[in-house]
Length: 410
Image 1 (cartoon, one colour):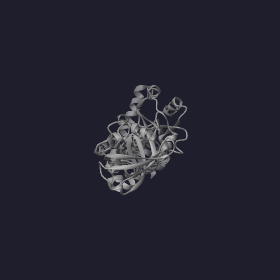
Image 2 (cartoon, helix red, strand yellow; image 1 turned 120 degrees about the vertical axis):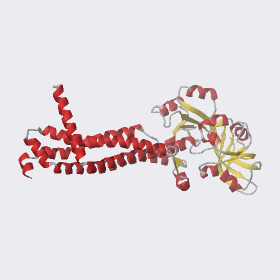
Image 3 (cartoon, helix red, strand yellow; image 1 turned 135 degrees about the vertical axis):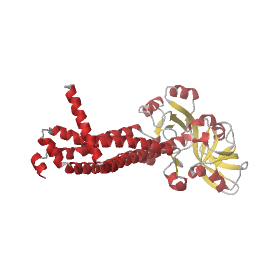
Image 4 (cartoon, one colour; image 1 turned 30 degrees about the horizontal axis):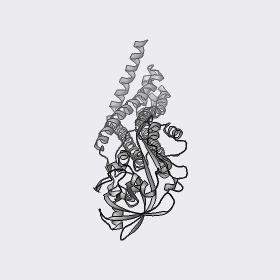
């Protein structure tokens, strides 16, 4: 029985390869089309996924973290009066069991900054530089010097804001903010340095001060946020709930709530990927089906002769299906190998600095680097095999239904 089955499989395979080889030119064009389609799908999906993940990275990295904890009413009125006390030992104990890259406590409040010539509204961020390896602060290019520690009573501005204020490094500026008693307080700061950022908006509106120094100026020991970053690019499935349970008295906000527009764009990308897959593979299946219908029509007399000599209809069906699977399998292997080569060439990313305004609006980095999501690749593999079967089904049924006498007469 096993030998009979093996012989049958060998016969079907040999006939399928022979038929494909007889129409080398047409099948080569079809094979190249399949390779190009799969390469295009995998490469474009990788670029789209890279763009999608960079959106998340930008939000998480730009002083937000995956999860931010506030006092319940802080987001409606971001003032130091809506802060909470920092307990380093308690925070460490509660967060030690989580899979975190790190956490940082900060003060974020609105302020007005004045030089001798100009005045601008800004957000002043009080931080401890030792905690900021989880944020963009650790990688900002600095001219001059950054804050030495939390108690440093100097200030760091963005280059765009420095230009607007028409001042220089080493000069003093005045910052007006509300203290713990909701009274306006003017504090003079020396400019320690200037940072450059990919985001001009950040350069214009965010200034950095030492957290401890800022607390002293505001007559408060409070902080306004605890920012948490996980070791993974996205929040683990139970991460938000776990953090929320550990800090029941604080409002837990994930990156999607911090930037809901970007969160919507992130979800839209998922839909776009699957729509793109559906369009490409639908076009591919029609092309494949058309090719094999033509192949069946060209072999009408041959199929009729084989059936009149006793070939079972099932063997005819398996033969047509096998031809389709061979083409799609070779196309899949070729497409995946070509995709790997193209992605290696694009490893350093695609430079979008020429479209700086649009890139900043989408909250993207100046370079889009491809990111291979293996779930997408597995979908491509499964879809390729499935569509090979679907595309060969109608031609195969047409071949099975041929009347040998009519086929021989034609």
